[in-house]
Length: 284
Image (cartoon, rainbow, N blue to C red; front, side, top):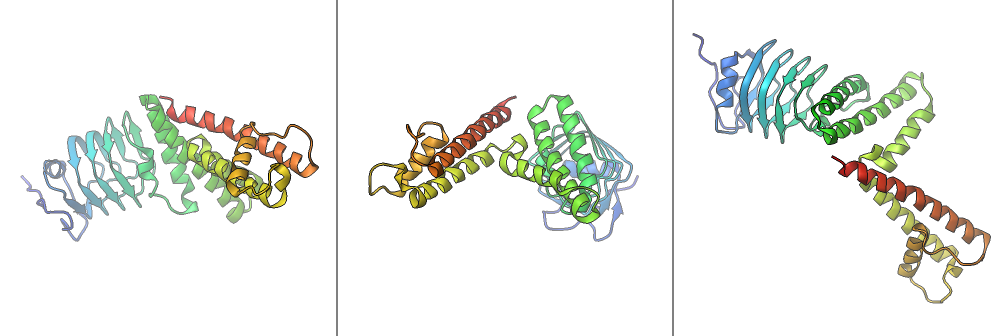
């Protein structure tokens, strides 16, 4: 019977300086350790691992391609430069686990709970849009089937982000797509976060109110009747116009009326989008 080639060491020590093959028993022994440990440059290719728990384990430069993980629990783990090509996770659970510079190409998730944002540091180049779209598409569909609608929407957000990068790659590098599609997606993501970032809309609303209050104060001071008005007074006035509470009762000038109408319409659109985004974010 072959003995495992490693023993458990505190994090920071390497099990091996060379890429070595692991057996299922080796990984089970690793999962039974109570210490935070690091497994580096090890390979478990085309294997099947079932019923194990990894807590505080760092997997570094390991090869886990074509592995089937079944009923595995990962807690506070970290994957760094790990090959997960065509790996399969069945009924697994991830908690506070991150993936850094890994390759989850064609990785599938079956009835697996995982935070899609844990993969956000896997892909860095626009050239990797194909891998990223496959990953987040798989996560989106599998989490939706599992009933994890919030996590599925998170995967949808990253899917849209990489769709935008794909459009940029096709326009800027390949010259086979137009500028408009990419720029439209860029604006939609920057303003609304594709419906998943209500704070973006709140920030834009604050910026619009503040910017227009400066315009009122410097170029249209007659918007307020009294003299010696300060920035705070004009900011509050802009705030009321934005939320349709401070439109002038009568016509004063074309620039002022045009600016008021523009701010009112901007506020109407942005508040509607903000309410919808918050409702989407808080929905189960």
